[in-house]
Amino acid sequence: MRAIRGLWRWRHNPLCRTTDLLESWLALSALLLILVTAPALGVLAGTAAQDALERSVAEQHASRAEVTATVVRELDRSVLDIDPEAAASDTRSRVLADWTAPDGSEHRGPALTRLTAPEPGDRFPLWTDLAGRTVARPLDSATAGTHAVLAGLGAALSVAGLLECGRRLLLWRLVRRRYDHWDRAWQRAGPDWGRTGTGS
Image 1 (cartoon, rainbow, N blue to C red):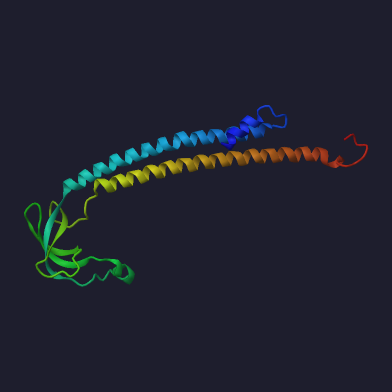
Image 2: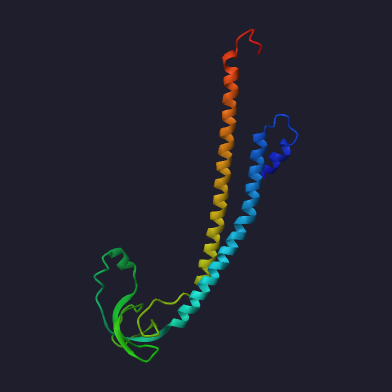
């Protein structure tokens, strides 16, 4: 808004320099570009991310299945759990479990469960691929939508930031030009400044 008021105020002002008008037009142009381009590119990026993530959700749901596993016995913590703080915050238990894969094959192996005190015979859900190997839970549509919104927001903010950086760079160059112009003018006037009879 300051740029618009500045343009209006400087229209017919005799003290208005060319650089003042350029700065005002630059600010107004950058503002309009940010208001139009950033949201448009954010929507495009978010839509593209949403499409890609929805395809990934469909592929993951097609290639993974939730089966019921049965606890054989509880296992000790993995030797890789060397961070005591991470281990303390992890509420999952490591167990040896049996499960039947979607293809009908029987499997036994280590698995993580949210059971607080797993006992032999306890049942818990486990995600596997179609061959019965344990895999992570597939991405759901709500999470995919959240990621897409964040991608669109990030793209919009990045575009706005780039446009603002470009505006500031151009403004810096305009100011440098103005200072160089003042330096040249001062060098012409400087030697005679304050002397009587020099025609000033």
